[in-house]
Amino acid sequence: MSTAWAVQDSWTMTRRELAHWGRQPVQVLVGLVFPVMMLLMFGFLVGGGRGIDGEYVEFLVPGMLALTMAFGLEATMTAVTRDLDKGVIDRFRSMPMSSSAVLVGRSTADMIQSALGLAVLAGVGLALGWRWHGSFPAALAAFGLLLLFRFAMLWIGIWLGMVAGKPELVQAVQILVWPVGFLSNAFATPESMPGWLGTVVEWNPMSATATAVRELFGNPAAASASWASDHAALLAVLWPVLLLAVFFPLAVGRFRGLSR
Image 1: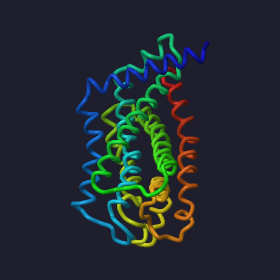
Image 2: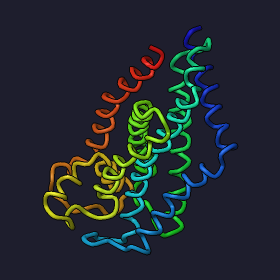
Image 3: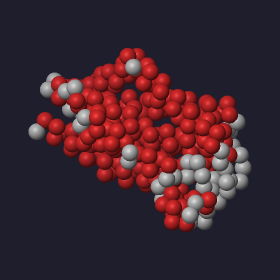
């Protein structure tokens, strides 16, 4: 009975988060359009493709899909700090409901939004000429790795949101997200960078996901003989699992300590 109660409460909290989409359509729209603007900017305005054997758009789109999963952390942080600042989470904790429902509802709604964002960006990529050349199961595995990476980033966002506490502090913490996104192989190959920087980029968790996704889609990838590049699929699983092992208990512990 307790499990059914927790599931019902979690679904109620998920519906609450989804209901916010109707009240804040501009925020949802911006979240969907921003990655598309980034794709168009880097694909056609900034240009690139140095060291890539093949069409740059087929290199860029998987990198942008991975980048979108990383940048989704900011929306999670904003939502958590908003609820904390308004005392919403404290009110939920005082109600006769499962204590896990708040975090489960938050994470479920974010994953739904992330899947929608992936679908929109992939659709724009297809319109621009991007194609996957692998099998359908391989494409599903690629999207699975992207969502796994997003799930790990989500719990980092929940923890950082509770640490920040107030929406005004989110902007300062968001600065941490940008190095993860841009010190990666989303836009350029590590071989086109100085040696030390290329090494940092290759070991970036987002780079592992982007490289593994490119391989599963059959898209051009960086021609590197490094261990990180050769085992990108393994790292694309290990990095999110490691991040979850660290930040999931930190987020849960922080949540439990809010009322102490």
